[in-house]
Length: 220
Picture 1 (cartoon, rainbow, N blue to C red):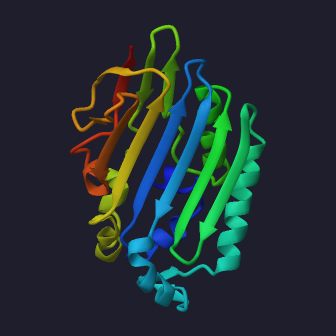
Picture 2 (spheres, rainbow, N blue to C red):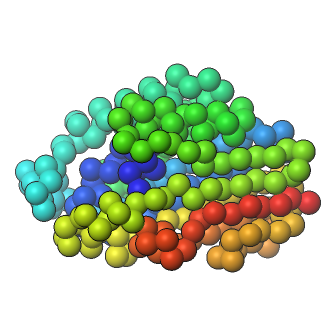
Picture 3 (cartoon, rainbow, N blue to C red):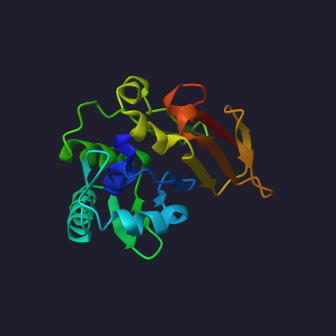
C-alpha cells in the first residue's frame, strides 16, 4: 500500500503497530474537474503513538521525529504543486490527534493520476504507477481501479508488521454533481441524495485480494 501512503508521507508512522484508517475522497464535477482529499487517521492510537514517538526504534524500524515528518510532507506538497493541472495544494499534520491530510484541486482526472505518479517517482517506487482514476465525460462514467497489488510484499513482512493491517481500514468516497445510476462494486453504499458512493474495506481484504476497490460508477 506504499504508493498511497507516500501521498502524505505518513507511512513511517504506519510501521508503529497502530490502528489506522485511510480515507480518499474525490469530488468530480460534470466537466471532469474536481477536488481530491486523502486522510490518514491514527487518532485511535494517539496515546500509543505518543509513547512510540519518544523511542528511537520499534520492531527494528527507526522512529522519525516531527522535524523529519514535516520535511517529508513539505516535499510531497512541493512535488504535487509542480504538476500541471493541479492547484490549491494543502497538507496538514495534526500531532494532537495524529491525522494527516492532503487536499488539492485538479483540472481533469488525468492530472490527478499524474500527480500521484510524480510522488511515486520522487519516492523511487519500485512498482510502476497505473492510473487509479478514469472519467469518461461522454459516457457519464467514473472508474476507480484497484492499484493495491501487495500480497507478495505482505507475505515478506514480519509478524509484528503484519499486525498493523489487522484493524486497518481503507475507505473510498466519490461525490458527483449528477445522481448515480449504477455501480459495479457490491460493497458500494450510495448516499440518500444518490450523489455520493462509498466503499469501506478492511486493509487485509485488499492486500489478500479477497475484496477490491475496483468500481465503475455510471451517472444519470
